[in-house]
Length: 141
Image (cartoon, rainbow, N blue to C red; front, top):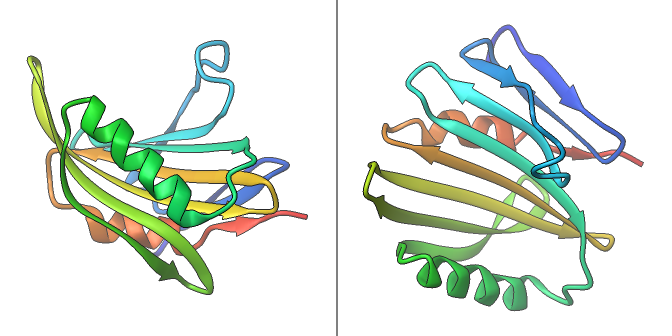
């Protein structure tokens, strides 16, 4: 990625290219949202962080899958995989609502009592650009 921008707060940091635009996040509606990025094709990437007592990735993976199914999503894939040196839950699902059909890709990290979620909602094939951003993720001490 060239022309990298950095987004950070007291919990985390990540980098993104100029193809993405940092949106203003209405925190009163979603206090756990750290950032929302929009891509030139209309795709949205939400970065969320919150405290959790979740004991394992396996347990949280089950909760994510159940939530997706309750929202009538079709789960394409769901696995525990590494991103860099961190274990994560990676899901790919298809969602149909009356207004639009889209795909959702999520990467979830559990570390030190926090859940960190990178969630892409897209109608195009930009998963590699999404994973470039996720690969720059750092937890700040």
